[in-house]
Amino acid sequence: MAEWIDLEKLLKDRRTCRSFKPDPISEDVMTRLYDAACSAPSAGGFQRISIIEITEPEKKEALARISRNQNFIASAPVNLMFCIDGRRMRRIAEYEGAPYGQDYAICTLWMGIVDASISAQTLVLAAEAEGLRSCYNGNVVDRADEVSELLELPKYVVPAFMLTLGYPRSNGQRSRKYSRNVIVHRETYHDMDMEELYPQHLAKCGTPRFAVNDTRCAQLEKMLRRQYDAEFAEKAMARVHEQGYLTAYQYWFGCYYPSNEDAVMTAEDYRVFLKKKGLDLNETGL
Image (cartoon, rainbow, N blue to C red; front, top):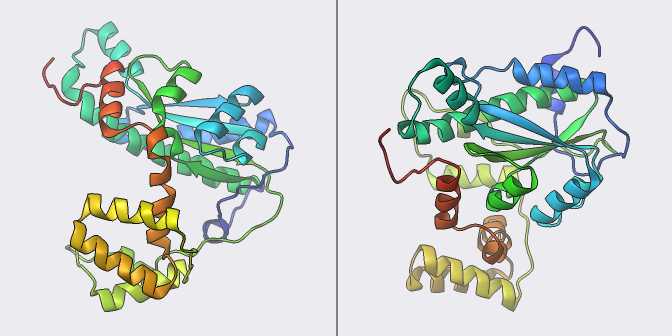
């Protein structure tokens, strides 16, 4: 790795990759990436995370299946599961004779997600400097119970997200992002007028037009009725039939993600799972 890295160029050139060469990543490179991840800031300095490295073909194939059959997960050399880890802190607290009880359940989750995200992105930038590419994966959360069993995660350890690493087959294209005018607020939150916001959305997403068919329309209408009401759903569907296509939001949030809802954990399933992990969000007290 070069001693001098142009950070601005590194940030601008970073892009998600879903097509990796089978080439292994050397132990020296992985060591540098882990050192970077472990040097990242964390809430209170507690580092409420653990990283599970997955390279075994069988486990990678299982993770690909869990993640909507995204086969690049199985073919990439390395997958990293970033986990919220309250176990380490609890063990140390007990050893020292310090309190660390149920009152910290939400804190463990919230701060653990923060810690994992900062650590992962630090690793991602280090990986970019090594000529690697990566892809974040949140699908594992939808079936956290299966992931936990597959990776033998003990009590108080919960999967947060996965990062796939490898050398890219091609440079690919960087996805468009919102400008700072949309993301950055001054002093207080400010809602942009839709006449100003929607052109910014189209500049970011383009104008993707997903084909209309009976299955997609039925799924979209079902979700609209669930979130809004029948009148809203009818008006929205009338506009869909008039325009003759689905927008990006209509497709992704109305059709693609909900199409898998019978195979993923519900909110109640997740609460039960967390309780089994020792993180009962419905109760407080030591």
